[in-house]
Length: 223
Image (cartoon, rainbow, N blue to C red; front, side, top):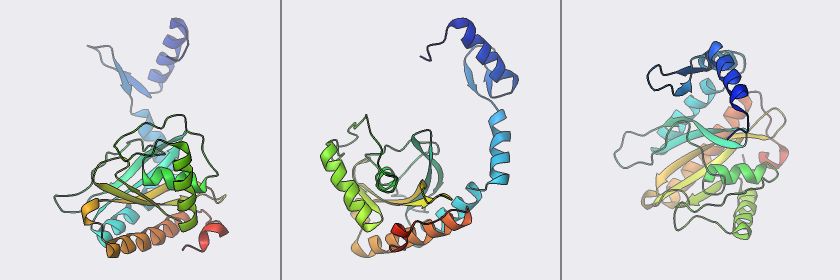
């Protein structure tokens, strides 16, 4: 898949294994990620805190809305879930840590596109009957999102689940990731939507400032 020959691939695997970035199952010979990444993650978190900032913000979002809150980070073109806070209720939206959020089918992906200057998407797969797969319609949704400062995606990724999301920004005023609240669509009243919207703006501002980011003037008016 990587288009390397067998000898080069073997050298890479040995080097990665020597640094504990991968490890091999002695019985199946299959490889998996190693503990070396834990060390790098701790160094990164100690010098440029992110998780320690985002997780309390997600907890506050969950407590204020009583719905599932989650945070994501853009890494190598993928918007990956890095934090989740679940409410203590049976009927709730569910996500997984590390889950890749489609940029066209989630509120987080749509709002990231809206404030990142545009991203060319090659895959517009349908996850539900409500997923937007038409490029022109997606462009319209992104434009509307840019005008109000937050995204709403109802049933785009999971049936009967509505997500709302806002971006947080890096030191250059560029979107770095997103925070979002996901709720069963049947429970999303106008009052709850307003509560979620206000909470998202509050926590997006908090996260941006806490990580040394800068809210661009075009977004400051929403907050």
